[in-house]
Image (cartoon, one colour):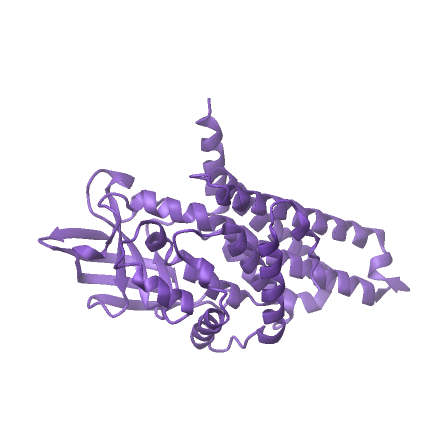
Length: 377
């Protein structure tokens, strides 16, 4: 059983503790799932999470970031694909929640019920962390926009029902000339050009936009607001990436404690060896430190802060980097089992690596933090 003492920290309220208990009970009976068909499993996970009511907070006018983080941490501890399925329902609709029209927000009822899957189409072959470099264009054509270009590494690509797509509309140079669009999956001109495989089994794809015609009503917010929209969405959801890493790290620590108590070596259990105790202490320290940064960022946003760019970047950077170390130590403590395909530790080792890249790579987070400090007087 995971250590839940952190729920008594002043970051949380009674509603968060109740949510944690409800989700923990659901996870014990529903997870983990079979990952042999990730598309089908991901779709069913969204359906089941929606039916259970856990997707309600992923979209809407008021998003409680602490709840999102608690859910991601708990799901990640039980099943990485369940965390992925949940996370995309929020990230994919974040722009609609924050800037969408009343007509566009009608989609949110479906995504919260698990009846529609969403995706966030930002990354391109030439622009990942550097959003200002994206090449996909959306040219105004009377009362419509004509999209051409390509996106890659798009989570839920190929199975999503709606995509939030960022394209260059040319109101200004670089980041000033980007806009965001709501694109239903059945829009003519959308191509699934390649399904991508990664070390962890997730539905990913390379998308193409071939003379896609969108009505002006597909524009999210105003022309030229795309960069602001993207950063606002990441400001909300970047902390939750740290929370998912925290969930992976907690599971690795739990498994390592169990292994250390039961595994015998040199006439004693692993837990009797001081070197092992040192590893466990380092792992526990990193877990708690990451949790403090993650839930500080989430709490700050929930208190009404307009932006938490620095706090979210710190949380994402530290939690993902330290989770990588915690899980690597867990591999060492498990020996051969730690790299045996199908073992939980081997699964965690594959799951954690991508979190240090997506939604802003670790090195980029350092730039974000430094620029935030340098801008202060």
